[in-house]
Image 1 (cartoon, helix red, strand yellow):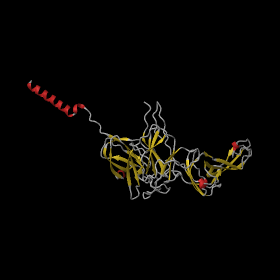
Image 2 (cartoon, helix red, strand yellow; image 1 turned 45 degrees about the vertical axis):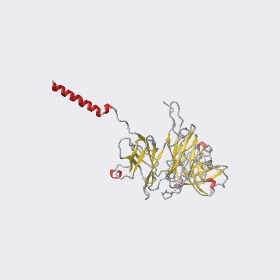
Image 3 (cartoon, one colour; image 1 turned 120 degrees about the vertical axis):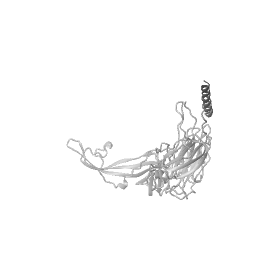
Image 4 (cartoon, helix red, strand yellow; image 1 turned 180 degrees about the vertical axis):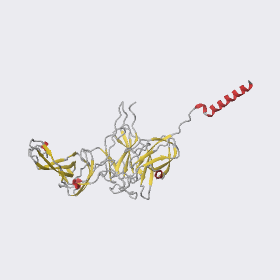
Length: 440
């Protein structure tokens, strides 16, 4: 009996010791966290993976991040930039790997760096530079929590990661390009020079400006050369959506409390694995003016349409034949509201970044329908007739001034220009701070 009591006392003692070791079941506090996102701004390489390699928990990764995107932990390529994710505060070792299913490829990392993160602070990790030049790749880690927009304001800053704003392949040696970045109220139809002060002036390559506050509004955002007010770069917008009692706001220029980083990014390098899609240049067939409206014709296609009718009046179609040179079949690919760049006209008023006001595609027929009915153009329903139908690819924009018409020189049309056009430098807008929530 005495031995039983001794054993029972030992069991109770072990149980109490165990409780003591686990601090009576209280969970350990969570490590402090910061917030991190990744963006790939390398114009001459394929998709990359971002990974933190010194810890496992609160170590956000991003897979298959292509040029001008940030990728997602799932590894699925995206065409947008992801939100911030939690990262354990402190010194974190980050490596960038080529995205591949081949272990021999993914084992060769492109960049290895250690960044110290402060708890509660939001960061963006920008991978920039060149995978092909001796200068190599670089990491720029920006703090995204420095903005303080007012009650009816939004905050902007500019990060210049474009070593060249020319259409040619960018080189890291060309670091003297310091564009001014502007926001302006949309023009009715003519893109006029900027006025006032730029959001940021002459931002050096690889650096970012301080935040500056502006009144909320719907804006065009564009580039100019240092000290100039003439637009030379792609326009972009980031309007956002105001919140309601049932839906939260989407950050943007017309939503108070938003903070935005405008990143100037280069074009992708030709003949590399970076994306190469975009508006191919087209030599205009004609550019003519009527008052302040310009009609630009990018090309046309003529088709020999052989149609006839039988004795009962039923139309019988024969094979159509394209008779225009294939080099002239150049649809402009634009839509009203797009931006196009026009260059090469000897009369400078025609050149520049232009807002497409309306499409003006037309169809002509030789000879015309003998009934004179425009609804039956080129159908030749009434007689046995061969006709040539020509589809003209045209659009219109407005200009200031009265240059000679038609334009002379070799006029080049490029567009439509969007952030997915990799043949030119661009502006991308990243949301650094979201407005206050309005919905439950």
